[in-house]
Length: 105
Image 1 (cartoon, rainbow, N blue to C red):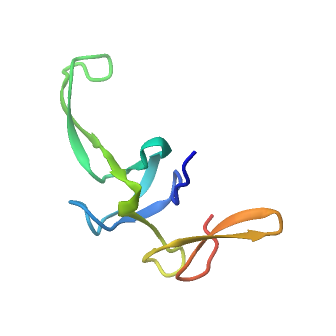
Image 2: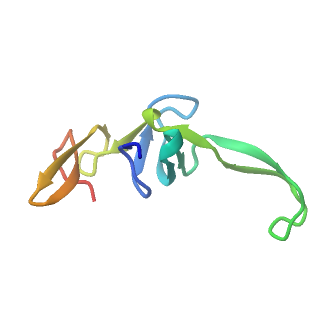
Image 3: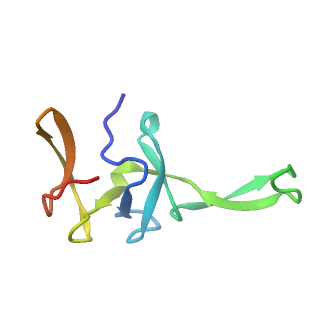
C-alpha cells in the first residue's frame, strides 16, 4: 500500500490547479491512484439517467478527484498550509505539522 500524507476528514489547502487557494475537507482518499476527493473542489458535471434518487435525471455537479501532490494539510495552530512529519511517542506513531510542531488529530 502506498503512503499518503492526508487522511479522510483532514482540512486541506489546494496549492495547484483551477481551485488553487481554496480549502476543503477530505471526503475520500484513493491510495491506489494517489488521489483524493475534497469537498467543493474540482466540481465536475455528470450526466445521469433517471433513477429513484434523481427521477428527472439530467446533469449533476459533483466533486472529482484531485492528485494528493496538489494538497497540503492546514496547520491546526497557525492556520496556513503546512508539511507533515511523523514521529514516535512511546509505541505510537503520530503525525505533526512541521510549521508549529503540533500533533494532528
